[in-house]
Image 1 (cartoon, rainbow over the protein chains, first blue to last red):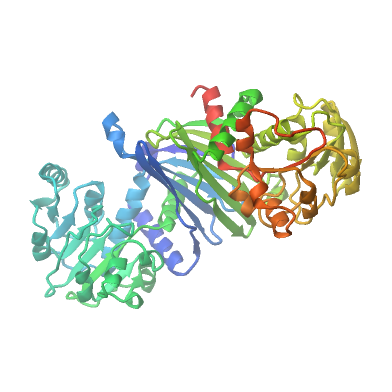
Image 2: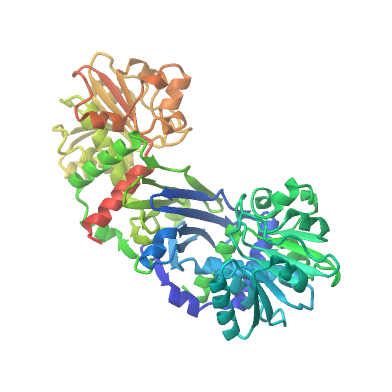
Length: 318
Length: 318
């Protein structure tokens, strides 16, 4: 307890092995779908002056080595002081003694990594084999990571990105071009529906952004922007044409993400939804052919935090 | 965030000023009773193999400088490996930015201190002026701290202690004798009722230990052992003769501590209970005379953790 090690962000970044992590996150999804993960309700503190919120996510896999408590905050007026709005840390405890072993001062970075990896895993099992163009809604960190994490899975280097701000779009184009992508920008949402067969939703929008899709071609959508009951990026009618709808958590998707909206509007039946963990467990591509329409609605789970935090500590051999 | 300071137990102990803390904890109780404290439900993880539990208590005082998340664990098989069963830490965050500022690796010590101080504060406002003998149920750390923290409040140095184990009683007697107390031991619960007019309950018992009191003399009871709905140290009929029943939290005492049992058995009406914060706010001794019977049922609140954690950081001028 007294020997708990503090690991700073630079050390965490230096020691991340994305390929190892992918496998570990997949194992987490499978554990979850097998009912071996205990995750109590998320704790929340909401502040008014200045406005901010703090979430506490925690849990463990039964009969595992460790348990993890993650604390993540967003204080949006921090930008006034040239400080990042988001911050966060993960605490790793022994499941044998209850003692704190590691404090990962990751500043929210590991949450981004595990979220990007979830998108990659969804695409691995669900996306068409041949991607013509990657469509991205949003220009933030996740809009970049979701694409770059697909690097060794998807050959396509062509991106069409939608955003509200031209400045942000130009900045996204500039950064992703440096990373070897051919980036077109658009402020017309339909352009993405028409031209892309892998579409990634990364915004905190409360109004649908993608209104429809081209039903005549195979397409995969990963929706990770909505993680609450009031955020929504997809017009619910899109679900009516989906051949496969996957979620990270059948329990969580009752209240969070795109799925509750689609069920409410009767374009989707809960019974037809499959958990990502169940898909991974098959060990095979879940899409049957290139023509299917697939949607993965991911709201993020504590088991991803548990797995990535454990993996970082393991890599550092602490 | 990246500069979060880790404070170890030895440094915490060296820098504690109990007199300053007492005032700060009192302010916390007042803030709570004035409705200025936000404390969401306690988070809980329960483990089976080995058995253990972890609690996450958190909250903040509105318009204050910081917020605090406390994590406390009990893994009872640790003794097999010569390790303490309890462990814990407190995280102190800025309420302005959400950034983590301090990690107090207090191993549960600050929880003991704030609990002992709550007992002292209760006694200050409620106990008779002249204490004949201090009665203590239990022989653990809290049975010692509750008494020693009364040092500059209560002249009496005579203790009568009850415990199940003669070994533990002898150990208690030995340690408290070294601290300048005259300690008698007993395994007869009635001895305490007969001889003591300040009685402190510190056990995790699930069956009442103190069955009755001498109604003909002024007496004060501080009950801190029961902090759940199933623990109980006082026979509920004792409440029938109480002139004043105080609690740290009117909300919490609906479900935890001695009070719910007494209300269920119709020996106590919720409406007559007063919060410690409301008593402190009066600024005066709340007991009217030496003959009254008073009970303080304390189950522990996050605001005590918030106040003590802030105070430690302030003292260390971090």
